[in-house]
Image (cartoon, rainbow, N blue to C red; front, side):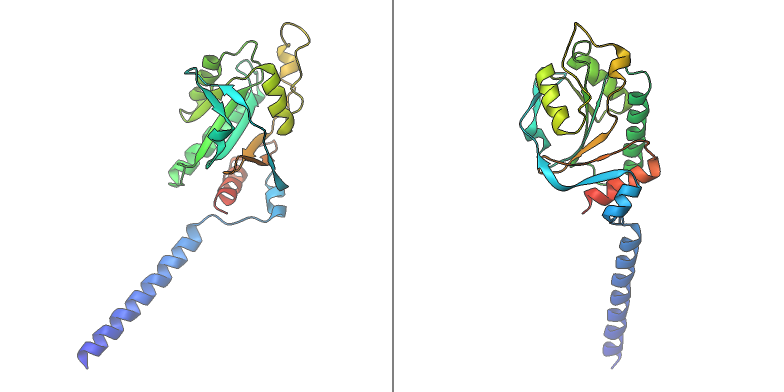
Length: 214
């Protein structure tokens, strides 16, 4: 009889422990946002993810970042340039805050990557843009492509204010007028959606966690 009572009590305690673990996980797990909530938080999710054509962007070490490097990773891709007076550093600072907030929560980052592509390849070398990106966070990857590649990629990703060269170099003021979206690419290397400015850290973090845990 005593053994049966002990067994029953043990089973009750195990059941309660399982319920408590599930309850805690539910409280701490990111909430999945509806499309309406995503829009309110500044994220536009495409109805259907769009395939991206292959591309080749130069890395600091002389190798190339291609479409295959997008596979199996959630990718944030931002287009800016090292001489950008305001929008680029502000956006990159917000992304740095996002990464730090995710680290503090022990959020899984092994399948995440953060890419900055220069829209000023005439002035920015691959080393320049990578150094600029790494100053915000060592995890950032800075990339440079030729003008034709840049035009193709930015057109596909709705950053279409990037223009072909009409003269030796674009004016800084002209470059500063680029579309300031943060592009989001899924683990199948497809254009998934974009964050629109202004960027608020709390909304950015909540939305990012919701999308990447679906």
